[in-house]
Length: 396
Image (cartoon, rainbow, N blue to C red; front, top):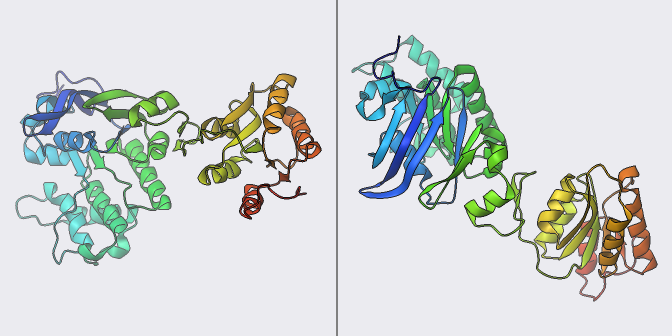
């Protein structure tokens, strides 16, 4: 039998936003947000700064009044839920830091248990157990007696996450939970959130700036820009080069969907260097040349080889061959033509295999034309740094 107010709930839905408009005062910042989140699902909000991601979360949390539409928790309208019911159902971790004075990290985490302690706020054995478990899960047990105001930003972020987790919510809202964290800590936090979502059926909604992390950790992604949800879907549907260009106003080739990364803009100039790569061996070289603003071409690479996709983002010209096909005469001829207009070649491949064996002909063509050949970008850039007009003698 349905609980009061749940008769219209979509089956299996933890959080439902129906035509939600949010903003400050009377001015709507984002309009008509529609979103359905199931238990156990991780949803990421992404978009440019100022697009309204935090405002959406604060409205869903009940900290701001909705300017239109509704928010439902398990079929119950948020506006009509008593505060205690809301606090036992949903936990919130926003970017603002609580004002604390002579407050330990344990004190901050314990605040997550107050919805269960009654008016006196006295923690029982079960509450103590939940606090300790949350601090252990987030790696802050050693900070229990430290002053919250005097730990690092990254440690504060973990303490606040522990507070939200020990609240034992069914819905968890997080605003930039990986801010201030190093790479290892970012991965640890996202892994923890995914495991909690799956194991305990928690619906997680988080705003993320790191689109590579959102691509890897989220089940669904909501893209916000210009006062509306621009598009939403699975990571594979959302994280495409055209959609990321539209969302972040990026240049052609700036977003690489394979790596989930944003690359430096390619030089709009004739290629100076030709890179022979493949199988990921050329990534470091191509990024090094891009950092030094050296225009380069690359080939012959297969279209969906990792180096091929990176070259499509960074190289002035990428000479590509169809996947699973050996390098053919047409692609090789084009690569040779581009190579002979370059001043040096970098061969990142140690041993050529049947699929790219003919790329060895490019190395021989460079030598025959007196074009210096280098094994890596470091040696090439060192030669370039001598101030001469050429890249020096051919290297072994």
